[in-house]
Amino acid sequence: MRAKISGTKECPRLCVFRSNQHIYAQLINDTVGKILTAASDREMDKSKIKNKKLEEKKNKKEIKLGGKSVMAFLVGKLIAEKALSKKIKQVIFDRGGYLYHGRVRALADGARSGGLKF
Image (tube, rainbow, N blue to C red):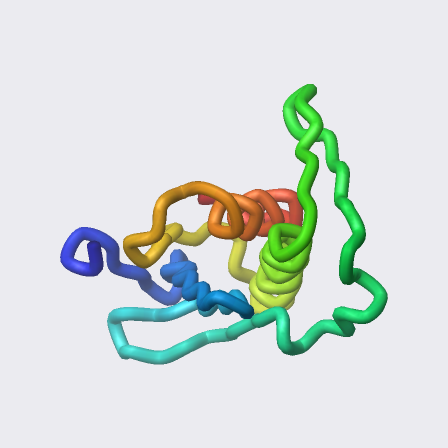
């Protein structure tokens, strides 16, 4: 994957890593090998969010998320906020070999709803 995907300062790579318990996202500039910003579910207060369902309308479809997918969606929104504060609007999505399904998709949807363009 990384041979095909490369990020620059203007359009960095949004890299996703998920473990069994957590999910992480980073914006990486591959030309210099620097991490521009990062976000994870460890930064959030999970006691308020735990066991809640999130419903959002996207393109006349309702997205219903529960459990860890809610956290992934909010991590996507958080990374989008951090990127927009650094004046980054467009990114290249690197799913890291994971299927575009479940938490990875929820993170991407959260980043899109936060204002990032893929």
